[in-house]
Structure formats: structure tokens, C-alpha cells
Amino acid sequence: MPETHPRSVAVTPRVMGRMRLASQGLLNGGFTSVPDAVRWMTAMQAQDLGSALWAVGQRVPGSAASDVRGAIDAGTVVRSWPMRGTLHLLAPEDLRWILGITSERLMNMVAGRHRELGITADDISHCRDIALKTIETIRTAEGGRGATREQLFAAFEEAGQVTKAQRGIHLIGSLCQRAWLVQGPMAGTNGKVGVQQLFVAFDEWIKDSRDLDRQEGIAELLFRYVRSHGPATVKDFAWWSQVPLAEARRGLASVQDRLVELPFGGTSYWLSPETAALLDDGVPGSRTLLALPGFDEFLLGYQDRSLVLAPEHADLVVPGKNGVFKRIIVAGGEVVGTWARTGNGKAPGVVPEPFSGELGPAAERSFRAQGRAYLKFMAG
Image (cartoon, rainbow, N blue to C red; front, side, top):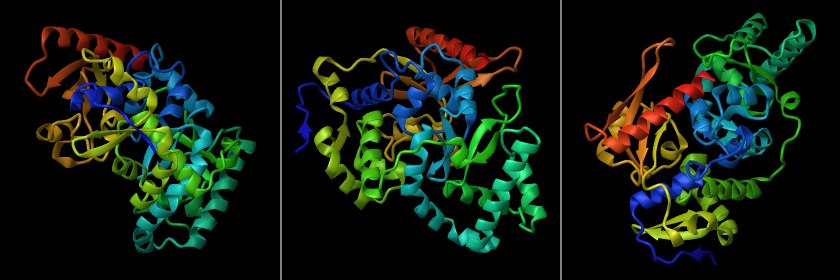
């Protein structure tokens, strides 16, 4: 049976939020390297690369944006579509087995769109051969490290595969879902955040992959999610991973003896024993203020975000429910506002946008320190 932590400490939403900060490496020093932080988090949403860089930076004290780009460039961190059809940062050895769990459901979800676009299984196989041949030609004949999306599109078109109307994007996505292609090194050498990545052959870029069957993999994925995101519910995990809830519950049953159950608000939350132990002496971070990026796992990584973000403020973080998350200010485990970058490359700055209208003097000083750290990180 799982351990149930005694209610010796008054557990509030803010305490739950601070425990999540601790689980995610946002308190008490974080991690010593970029790959270590990404591996601990298992998957960090990264469709906006600039936000993903700072998400890692907040968890690796003393790092710079160039360190995260360098890890991507070296292949010690990969950026791909492991779940929810959205880009994430992952450890390279984790990508294949996670795709083995998630890709079939995603491909079923886009099957209707593929029929509209006239994409068949034969087309995908054809494009695999074209893509791998194009990448190999660029590598051997031109000394390149991979192919840009435009180069793959051109090769597809030359072979009679139409790429207009998002057909090309869906073809490349299908090749990545089947672990034939993966995004590899950064294109260009100017180090700008917006530079795209090259596509490379999966087996050439990721030579060592873990091998887990579906049941074992779901249990592993759930355990690592709870360890890095807890306190969280099984429904949070099912949403985050897109693993069907019934399978998620079976996965929980196989690992719950290594986790702690914390009842709160009529719901069972799960967390690691290490995070639960913080309740014994008081959860740290009550005075910690963080300027986190948009799409950070602290907020986005849960189906139910109401523990840390008051529902009446949700539209201020995701205006119009358009799926675009603004940068957030987190104080004491609670989202208390958003923030924005101002100025241009020569004179950048940051400005807080608190829900209450203003930050107190101490919070203002903390935010300014966070702003300086952010600008230094992004410039590095």
C-alpha cells in the first residue's frame, strides 16, 4: 500500500504550489547541468524555443541560453514531438520509448486530416526514403549536418510529393513520430534564438535508446512525472502524457508503493517521498518570487491548474483561451501576475504585470533581480 502522509502540517494551495516548485528543481539550487535538468523533468514543453531556454535556465543556476542551445546542438538534449503534438525537450535516450507509447494515439487523431491531404502509408514510406537520402547527400557531398525543412520540402516536391496546405509539415511530423527523423543541431552559426533546427536521421543522431514495453513504459513515465511534477493527480498525468486514464491508473498501481499519497480537497495527489518529507519541517519558498517563462511546466504541466492559478486570473495568463501562455510571476507558490520583455536588442528590459495592480516593495526588488538574471541569461 502507498504511504499516506499525515496531515501534521496545514496543507494549502500555496503549500502545494511550493512543493511543485521543489519537485521541479525551482527551489534549493536546482540542477548542475542542462542535460540533468531536462532528464529530471522528462519532457519540458518547448514549442517556443526562447521560453524553453529560460525554463531550463531557471532550473540550472549560472547557466546561459547558449548552454541550452549548445546541448541541443550536441545532441545531449533533443527537441521533438513526444506527446500532445507539441515540441518538448527530452533526454535523447527517452524519446524512442515515449514515442512508442504516445505516437499511435496522435497518428489516429490526425488520420482524418491526412485523408483530407491525401497522405497514405505509402506516401509516408516514400517520403522516409526521400528524406534519408537527402540528409545523407547533404552530409557526404556538402559536409552539412542535416537538412532544413525547406530542403526536405524541395526534395519531396521533386519526387512528386506535394507539400502545400500543410501537407509537407504533416509528412515530416509523421516521419518524426515513427522515429525515422528527429530535429538535430541548430541551423546556422549565429546563435540566435529563432534559428531553426536541422532534421537528421533518428538512428544516426540518437544511437542509444532505452527499450521499454508499453506497460513498463507507462509506469516509468508516470513515476518520473510524479517525481518531477508532484503533487499531481493521475488525471494530471493522463492529460500531460495523453495516456488513456485506464492505463494511467494501472501504471499508478504498479509504482504507488514508491510514491506518497496526499489527500487534499477530496482528491488524491501523488508525490515523491523526498517532496513529501518537506512537510515535516515546513515547505520552503514562502518568500520566493520567480519570473518564469510562458509555457513553463510549473503551470502548463497539469490538467487542473487552479491550485496555483486562481480561475478568475486564467484569462490574464492565456488571453482568450488561445493556447498561448504569457510569462508568469510566481510568489510563494502562487501565480500572482504576468510579465513582459520590453525594449529592443540594444536596450532590453522587463516589466511586471501583477494581477493586484502592483507588487509590494520586497516583491518588486525580487522581480527586478529576476529580470536582471533573465536578461543576462538570454544574452549569454
